[in-house]
Length: 238
Image 1 (tube, rainbow, N blue to C red):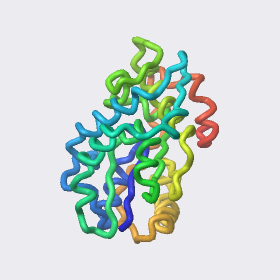
Image 2: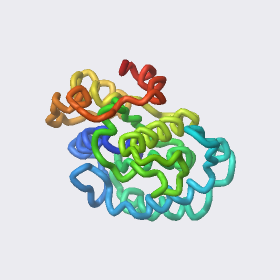
Image 3: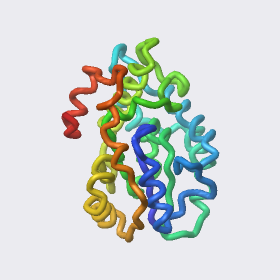
Image 4: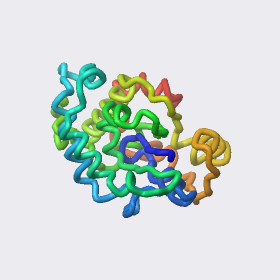
């Protein structure tokens, strides 16, 4: 049995890989929505709130995730994740998994619960990521503290950098691969070959839209924030 999960902030284009996995025979849950999310998601949302209690906000854009890697995982968290994944874990398919952007908010404990799973780190240019609303825009919804702002775009950018920092602070699991959304669109064959080698299964092709790359270039509102610069350089977005 091979367990697969997609880690990436909302509006990172994760529906593309979710639909690709589904079309390739991977069981992605009994019910998935148009975005490829395994639903209902409420138990995972609650799990996010449980783990958030152990994240220390240092003020500004600094959070301490250290204790998450050493403490005993809160039993309530385990119960909630197991509830969310009941259908996936009971399914007898050789390849199975799930996609839900909120999983990224609990990545450190998901890695510890499922050390043998295959993790697809899905990344998209944050300037495109913050153009549209997502449920994780306001981190306080999940019990996470951050600098208050009335600037909706800045709030989304803070959500992006928080999740980036959490992933950076988490030791890489045994099996993981990083894929840029832009490469999955503009270099589809090459990217899918990388994923096929990583997953060990052939992947079906789904229709992609090149116009989904670089939408920020025609955006007339603010989408540039200095605190995203280092991460953008890391992923070669600038």
